[in-house]
Length: 126
Image (cartoon, rainbow, N blue to C red; front, side):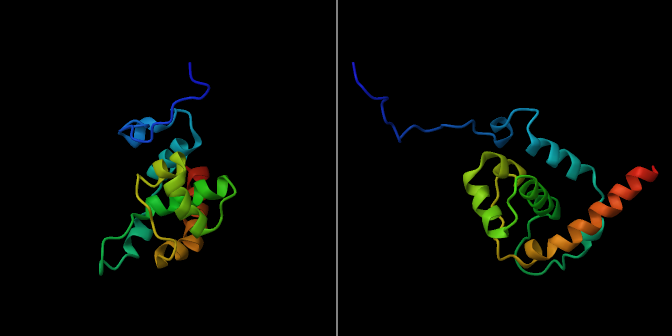
């Protein structure tokens, strides 16, 4: 009988193949994604010029910022790192890794406050 748990770094899957299966149904990351999907982000979407390589959808960037702030992660560099290291951040990012130097990622912060303020106001009025 061995004194240690066997070490096997060659195992094919340690996590389920679908990022959706990685988190419990009541996880905060799921809640953030559900709320973001209900927001009207058409103003943010229109800001994308359509030039250059494909951009990350504003819903993904907004979700990462909100989830990051909710967990005390404010730096875009740390948020990017978390999309590699954290299952929850990976879920919010839809298994993508937005670059912390992306102009839209860094310019999203003021837009996020504006959109959330407008959405909160319209939700109260409705």
